[in-house]
Structure formats: structure tokens, C-alpha cells
Length: 223
Image (cartoon, rainbow, N blue to C red; front, side):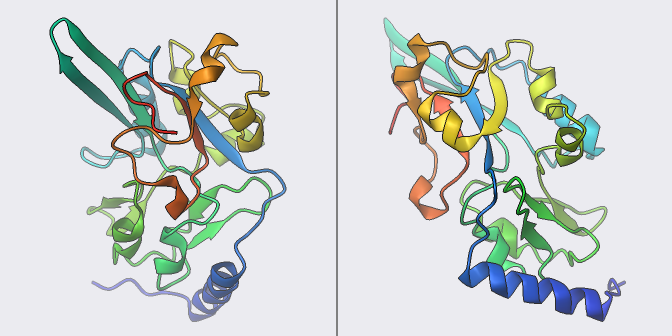
């Protein structure tokens, strides 16, 4: 059965969408993620905390821990890459949405989805180069990480960050994360030489300018 949408809501959302396409939202502060690929142990506690917080059924994962292994004996290596939605400065998902359900917040730069406007067309899923939007067949909608904006507004960190037992995942202003000035347990002073915006097997960040930085493994560093 097709979902009945409020026409006035759709009109307002489309107007917001068109404005965002031609003049991307420039938030007061752009929040982003930092992940230490080297010190992460791949326990997936962040994945489980995220699924629990968002009540996700089996299948969809807003946060994904990827295991990367390579080399040949004795020069073998392994590291983890941890990603969710990157809350891009120029999100590809936003202009792809036909109902204007996707929007970018002006206060913190978080890209969010209004589930009441989503029709489950999955165009955003196809547009995102990082695989962030996740289709939920039981609800016929697409959803994704919203950086636990409700938690942040209450002065707390996102669930994934709080669940990380190694404290290698964090959020903060992306400008401060990028230049290494943000105070976080995700990196040490010595780690900063490996602070990059792209790691191997990741889409080109020039596409959407994602709000994420990594402490990269020597075998995974791109730039």
C-alpha cells in the first residue's frame, strides 16, 4: 500500500532541497568523525550500540567495521576501517531525493532524513559513494546515521563513540579534527603524522567532501 504524504510538507521539503542543491548549507560548525585504523581491535561494539539505539532489524547497518588484511609472510598486515554516514559538506544523497526528505542541519552540519517524507525509492542509496543510506524493507524507507543528534543536543557523545572500548572513535568539529587540534583519545601526538582524509578502498573524498578523518595504517594511507 502506497504511503500517503502531506502535500504541503512535500512542497516545503522540495523547496528546501532545491535551495540546498544550488547553495549548499554552510553550517556554523561542521561535526565529523575521527577513527584510528591502527588501534581499533574490530570488536564491533560500535556497530551493536548503533543497531540497538536505532532499533534496526537484521541486515541494515548504519555503522560498519571493515577488516583489511594483506601482504605475504613475513610482511603481513591488518587494520580496521570504521565508517558510517560521513555527513558530507556536499552530500550526493541530498539532491537525489525526489521528496526532499534529506536535509543538512545548519547548526552542526549533520545530514538527516525525515522518515515521514521518505518513499523508499532508494535513489539516495545509489547516489552515496560511501554506502551510508540503508534500506529497511519492513518499513519501506531508507535510514542512516544521524550522528545521534539527540544525544549531542543533550551534551552526550553518539552511542558508537560511547561504546568504543579502545576509545579510538570520536566526533568533533571537522576543522579541528583535520588539523589535529581537537582534544581526543582517538589519536596521540605521535599519531598526527598519519592523520588523513582518505584510506585505501574508500571513494574519492573530492566527490562529496566527507566529514571524517582517519589515523591510517602505513599500508592503508592514501592522503
